[in-house]
Length: 201
Image: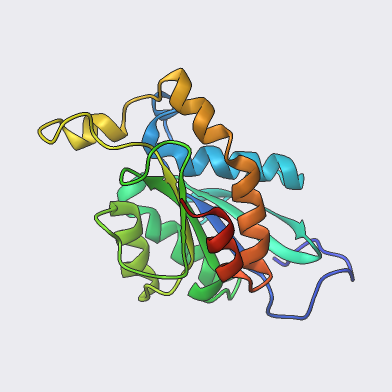
């Protein structure tokens, strides 16, 4: 199955896979851990791509962004097995790790902060850990979306990331969607350094 693209597309081999991380059940909607899902939904809306096809243990949709082939993927494996879905999609579309962009939550950043990285370790994030294991590489770009630190050192981490945003924090995160879109376009264009200097912190 190929892409439904026109002759506007750029050279062969320029496809991108963008994966938003989260948990699939409705009870997780709007939780901190689903920041990646929410951001992907916003990109889908802005780029007029429907994420409604079922495959790769997830939901995906394909379209064009700036004349480039782009696949948007929501793994439905639950966070800790995100890599199973992403590796299957990347393999199917023959997309290397360097063109797999991951959107995920980051408890080390305050809500309304984003951190773009070209590559790196999982930094304690189980979704990223799974992706690194299944892709066999740390060399994939990611946009980490701040969801805030635990309220105290002894607070339960799972309860925190599976909890819902306050209205203020939700507004702060949603206020960065335009920057996340701009960063993604810059990354597609090979300008990740510009994306980092423009949007990190």
